[in-house]
Image (tube, rainbow, N blue to C red; front, side):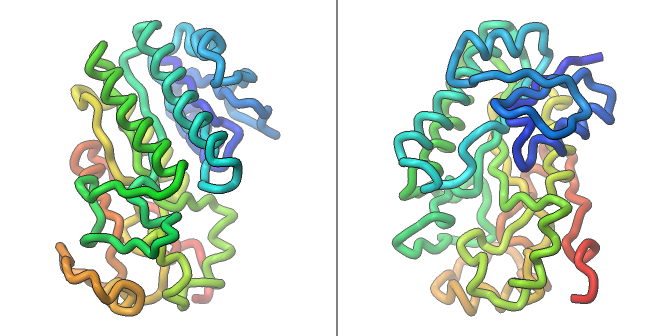
Length: 283
């Protein structure tokens, strides 16, 4: 049985990832500063800002999934968000490298493209936004995710560790589907995230596939559902909110996602299976 350490196990996404690995037969250690209310795995309180504690938490592990972070811009002073997200990622990957761990997954973000928290009304240069789209954040959160990806590249160059950095769209847990009727007919809402979403259960399966894959090096992959979170066709959303964007790279049939997930499907043989339309009654 392979041992997997999952950081941020008590957060929004963490419990879903913990449960999925446990269900798939992994020996799971969940780490966080806060103990979860309930968990399907062993738990350890760890301060990821302390490199020594990271070594202790990762001892004996075969892989690590690093989800812990301050998850948005401007919830904390800028320097706190940047320092926390950059240093916890560095410490986890540095400790993993020092211990000879060969596989890691880290949570990056669609925010690294700069559109989400832009105060200059930044628009995408083209859609669907793929991994080659310029990363132009104005905020410390998006910048911290770019630094995390660069840290992954550095560790990979040094020791060959396989590191998959997921640029994750808007995370939707089972409870969050209740809010969909509040915005699905209003295109101005959620425009800065390009109306993207991704079910936490689909992220969990992607994390496992990334751990089980071989020979990927250091790679970045978007994670998004196949459709938008709106009950308005994607072509209409773009005309309403981003009329200046003329570079449309695929036919926007029906509700086609505007955050491309094609690379993740190709590289991991992954497929998102949870759609909001199956979880929101009476739309």
